[in-house]
Structures are given as C-alpha cells and as structure tokens.
Image (spheres, helix red, strand yellow):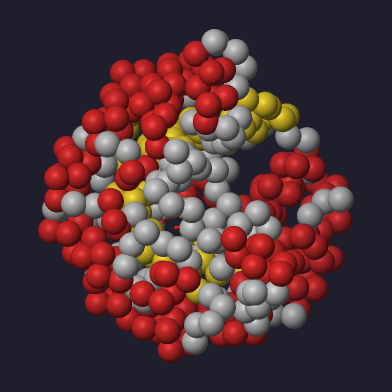
Length: 374
Ligand SMILES: C[S@@+](CC[C@H](N)C(=O)[O-])C[C@H]1O[C@@H](n2cnc3c(N)ncnc32)[C@H](O)[C@@H]1O
Ligand code: SF4
C-alpha cells in the first residue's frame, strides 16, 4: 500500500507566518496542473503494483484551483495507478474558496476528506496573520461542507500567536467543538525567518510569544481534547474514533509515498527525493523531459534518525526491535539516554515500545535530538 501527495503551489495571498512553497501568481495554474499530470505518468513505476491507499492534495492551497483542473489530476491517477476501494482522498482548502458548487464538485470527483485551514475563528487574529478569510467565513465553510455531505473534516488551528490570550485560545477550541469537527490539527506558531513575521521579529516589531505561555496553551489543548473524546495520536493531531488521518499516519509509520508537483518529497524506505521548488522551472523541466528532482540514499544513520523523528511524536512510539533492525550499535548508544528520559518521566515503556508522556511532549524535539545517532 502506498500514498500519493500532490502539491498545488498556489495561494491567493501570502500569510505572514507561512514558509511553504507557493506562488500568488495564479496565471500559470493550467500549465502547472498539466505538468503534474505528466509527472504522474512519468513516475508511475515508483509505486509499481501496490495499491494507492491515500491521496492527499496539499499546498499551497488546492482549493484556489478550479474543480475541473483538480479532476484532471484525479483522472490521471485513476488511469495510471491502482486505487484501493477505500482510498482516503484529502484536499486542503481555505474557507474563502468554498461554496456549494465547489464542494459538490469535489465530492463528485472523489474527494472524501476535507482539511480546512481555519487557523483562528477570531477576526483580529486572522487579520494579524494576513489570512484571506474572516471569522464568519471560517464558521460557514465548515457548516457548508457538512451540509454538502462531507463527514470526514479536519481543521487547522494555530496557537501561541503573539498578542493573544489563553481566553482567545480556549474560545477557538470551544468553537471547534460546537461545529462538531471530528479531527483537529493544532500547531504552535513557528516564526520562520523568510516570512513577514520573521522580518518583524528581526526588527523588533514582533515580540515572540513566551514559551511558557505557548506551553500552557498546549497543555490546555491536550486536556481539553481528551475530555471531549479525541485521541492525541500525534503531538499536533487529535481525532475522534475512526477519524485518524490515514495519509499522515502512513507517513509517520514510514510507509512509501510518492510526492508530485513542485517541492514535493517522495520516500520509499531507502531513498528520499525532492522536486524543484520553482513553478516555471518545474513546468519547463517536465515539458523538456529533463530531470526535475534530486535523490538522496538514506544512510543507516539517516534511517535511524528519521525513524525517531517521525515515530516518537506519535501514539505508536519507537520500538526497540525496529531500531535494532536499522542498527544494533546505534540502539546501544541511545539506550542510556532513553533510560534517563524514562526515569525523568518524559517517556513511558510498554514492552519494547517507548512513547512520550505529556511532560515529554513539551520537549519532544529535544528528546528526539538527544536520541539521534551522531
Ligand atoms: C501549508 S498550509 C496549507 C493549508 C492551507 N493553505 C491553509 O492556509 O490553511 C498547512 C498548515 O500548516 C500550518 N502552518 C503553516 N505555517 C506555519 C507556521 N509558521 N507555524 C505554525 N503552523 C503553520 C497552518 O496551520 C496551515 O494550515
Ligand atoms: S498558510 Fe496556506 S494560504 Fe497561507 S500562505 Fe501558507 S499555504 Fe498559502
């Protein structure tokens, strides 16, 4: 079983925090979608005979593209790959792009899971982030998606936003529960250097949020979601029973995926490759049948570190047998550090599996870095 990720590199506006690959020049979108369809044909052997269990349209903002163009991509996948009958097909969308016609079209073309980028239900916060939508559009988009028959809906929210209070954050979560959304991805704001927020931080216009405040919001998030029946199956991801994202879980569990489109990454257990992160260049290279990606063969050390990085953040945790299978020596080296974290109450042990406790989740990146093979 494998997954396909399709990167749609267009957005209406540039949000002040975002460092993903996208362009606000929408005029190239038809040529780019055609290049994506060509790449799907060029790379069909990557997946071979395996069935495609998940398809994920991410970005950028896939919902800025016309449904007909997205349909062309789905057709190219259907014509060139074997799709599992219960395939999860997710599309990332922004609230201001959704209307009844678009939602019905998406459903007809096989999209069965929507990831709506709400970020906040608060108008001040939305304006501060330079989002294209307002609070009413945020609420209406989820209601409309449900009315159009989408049951499998996830929303994205961001916490730790400078200038916001704990009360603002609590209110976001209350609104999410009221909407009856079965899945939430909640991210702590990262200030990326090459963004407007990054520049503001450099010049002192933006004061970073106190770590302690972000931690309090994260703690509240974990307790709140648990008490409302959501499982925290990854540090930033919470699901009601049966609503865990199959696509993201497969990625965290190290399964094979093919990444299509500018900047998309692919992984097959042994090699990782990444496409050129430039829209005109991507189109040009595909059209000229020239190489459009770079490949790296993962060393044992890379495999070991990648395993820790992706697995430790999940409810599945790290398994000593898997680590030993990659490298018995690297496992031996990391064991004393793992034991230390166990004694400190940051990880817990269940047979051969180690998972993060809530204490550990606060410092997950630090624990991973300490366990890495050097
Ligand atoms: C690449 S965006 C695509 C989704 C869609 N375009 C949108 O705006 O909602 C995926 C998610 O990453 C999160 N994200 C992006 N940059 C972030 C940052 N600097 N800090 C925290 N979360 C971020 C946002 O929650 C966003 O919804
Ligand atoms: S958050 Fe979404 S809409 Fe905003 S710039 Fe990033 S990808 Fe585009």
